[in-house]
Amino acid sequence: MASVPIPTTVKDEATAPTTIRATVVQAASVFYDTPATLDKAERLVAEAASNGAQLVVFPEAFIGGYPRGSIFGATIGHFTPTAGEQFRKYYDSAIDVPGAYLLTQQQC
Image 1 (cartoon, rainbow, N blue to C red):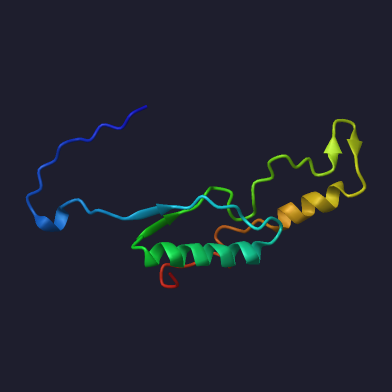
Image 2: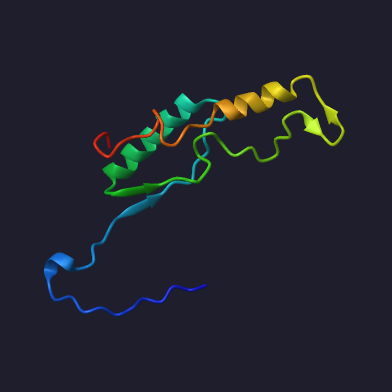
């Protein structure tokens, strides 16, 4: 699906389109360590801002991590003794939205 711009006529400079400089982050989270991941995100945001970014976009599963390849100790018909512990660590790495870990606009 392609996006097609629609021509507009601007009569007032106050309503003119605004250009935003954005940075897309391609980085891995610190798996099973939410505070370290948030520290990393803060450093990456500061770096992007120092390069002129007004908007910084992270992968959807940056906080909490993406468990690609993780089976959490479970396969069909079999669970290891550590299966629950592995999933609990992953679950505990998630954050609540809204919640204490989210930055407000005033903090940015």
